[in-house]
Length: 98
Image (cartoon, rainbow, N blue to C red; front, side, top):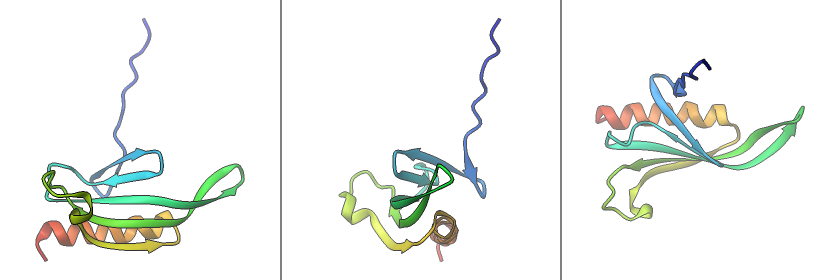
């Protein structure tokens, strides 16, 4: 029998990460806010694409709003690490009501 592959979801600081092409969603759609990270530019480092420009957006998850009305806060960072770091802080603050 072939062994079943167990998929462990990717997460950062206890929240799920989902990727679709150059978009990364951080957080859960079940909560009021989610973060959308969009990789705008990359460079090759040893055959690996490394993000050099990342757009960060704190968004409401309300499906009744138009996409431009969902954006609460946005910024642009020069690395994926810097982007996910600020995203984590924004999401924590937004979900705690501060």
